[in-house]
Amino acid sequence: MEANNSCEISRLPEDCLSHIISLTSLRDTCCCSAVSTSFLSAAIADVVWGNFLPTDIDNILSKIPNRPVFASKKDLYYHLSNRGVIVDDGKMSFRLDRSSSAKIYMLSSSRAVGIIWGRDPRYWQCVPNNNSMFSEVAQLIVVWWFVIFANFRCKNLSPKTKYGAYFIFKLEDDMEGFDRPLEASIYFHHVESHHRICLEARNGMSRQNPNNQIRYPQVRDDQWSEVEIGEFYNAGEEDDEVGVKVHETRELGPKRGLIFNGIEFRPKI
Image 1: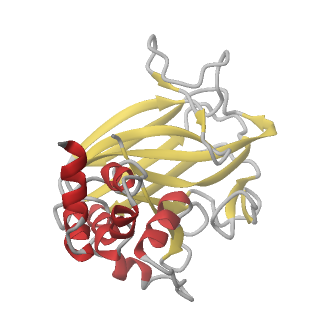
Image 2: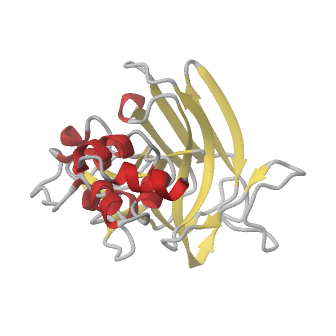
């Protein structure tokens, strides 16, 4: 009976079959493409993959200089979910979450994040880094007061989605001053939550410490390290804005040896 039903549905016009597949999930679409050649042809249609792209994708791509051309919306989706693109004059990167198709943005450390004394080359410098999507990243020379902050309009993110804000970085061999906790805060809907984070993994730990609630970093697939600043639920209201801050101004010892890539807003699935 199942074989006959499969045969019968395969006789539907390809555009009709594509429409049916477009109503399923990304995982179901990939499974459908393995059923038969008829399903494969229908599953790669633009009407299917366009359903997994943000509704404002054209507006997002319009912010890319020399906008790339993709052969299909499936190719576009895989490019955005695997690597992403730089938008808004190099101030942000944009990509899609592979499992949910939700939007992910990272603010460039050199162009979109506020850094106290970040414009003074005695303390910070903007340098190229082959492992970053951005043309330049912020490299810390030395400071005693460490303050980094950013604001982001939530209308750019996927609505009705829980997001985390992440500090993306690397530590150099001559790192100093980051073995102690930093203060991290996130401000959303007139509520500010505070956390303590450490940029150096302690005793091999790369997760949150259950005893003192210090958040420790973990290494990403792209070889950058990340530590969560905080989380918030984006309902999708037009005027919502989230603010984040990472700082240490109490223990006034020297801090050096940090390469700061940016602050990422990513869905928590």
